[in-house]
Image 1 (cartoon, rainbow, N blue to C red):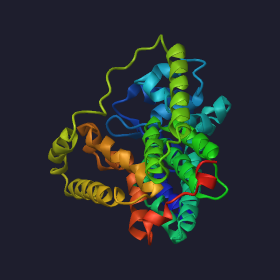
Image 2: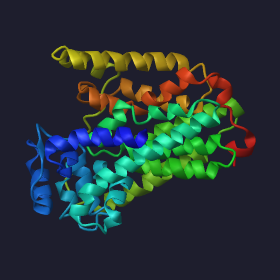
Image 3: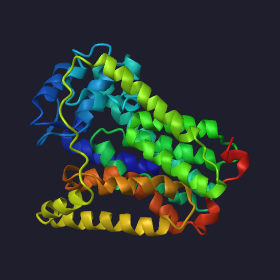
Length: 350
């Protein structure tokens, strides 16, 4: 089912674009530098309205994932260090710098599809480990945020796969803390906000066992910090690209987004549903001791301080709260989420 849903969605995007995979680079009419970069390497490309989205930057990174030629590649990033922080997805799609651009554009799509399918399997196995139906695995491919990540060539699907893998490593008799820590580290190198996912897991395990498993969070933080230092050294000669627009004062982003939603009934409906899901999720998650639910809880706190630039577009806010959209069905359908999530010392602590 994960394969089928992924292929249907991808085909829906590819067919109107004449099967040109550059549609997933999310190049924009108002982003001429990145579009020219892609055209110089791919020839004919499909361009979207406005500024496009993240895929165009990941394509640039995938052509030089270790920033060995920053003047040729990273110079086309709007915020080089910020974009470069999310390194694992473009490194995989670029064959760690070995693939030519014509292969990279297809590999970006292939990596995301493979990650969606693998994450579906992991979520299904997680449900089985907690005594529930494997059909809960469909909380991955039916997640609007993850489908949006595929649509724009983003790194969120790879990050979700690795984050779910970390939770599964803590929930499986054969899993270990070391494996979970490694998976959380790779997840954070895919999308640094996944550090919040690891923080939620550390918090709930403290509530369950009264013990802080520091390595689940500290090792990912150290890895992210080390990679950032590398980026600062490699990209120091490039312009910083300006301030971060994604964060703002608490709740202001939601309030300002309502004005945009009113212009489109569909956007309004989706926005209201997503906001309602956040509230319902919090009310249920805080009463549970479910690893996945608590891993997603910090995402709610993040959502409260996201700016209008994220909240006004339903697909963007869905991407931001994707962990919640996958965790909430588990809370709804697990027969006894509190007991199902309890982890024995034998495999919770390695």
